[in-house]
Structure formats: structure tokens, C-alpha cells
Length: 59
Ligand code: SF4
Image 1 (spheres, rainbow, N blue to C red):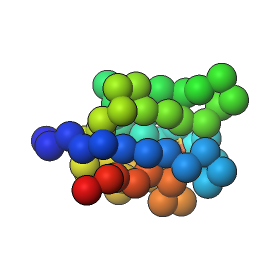
Image 2 (image 1 turned 90 degrees about the horizontal axis):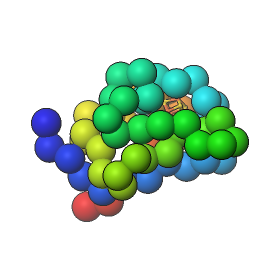
Image 3 (image 1 turned 45 degrees about the horizontal axis):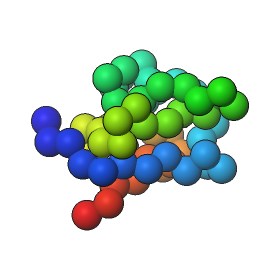
């Protein structure tokens, strides 16, 4: 799967863990419990697992 530059909106993240569980190579939990990118890039399909649309990609 193609990887793209990714952002997580920490104000939107409800800490459900779906992205961390489905894409553990791309996302981890920050100290505040929200998800954050590990490398700054993530699988472009990963936005689909977030129930609140907190994951977005830069073109
Ligand atoms: S899937 Fe979305 S709401 Fe859930 S932890 Fe990841 S960024 Fe946060």
C-alpha cells in the first residue's frame, strides 16, 4: 500500500485505538492518549478506520 504524509488531529481523536490496532507500523499513542504518526507517513487507507475523520493526508 502506498504511504503518504499523514496528520492526526488530536482535538478530534477520541483515542479509540483503531488506527494503532490496524496500522501499528504507522501509528502509536502519544503521552496524552491520542494517536500520532510514528514516521510521519502512513498507509493511505488508514484514514478509513478512524470513526471521527481525525486522520488526513497531505497531497
Ligand atoms: S482511529 Fe482516529 S479516533 Fe481512533 S485513535 Fe486513531 S486517530 Fe484517534
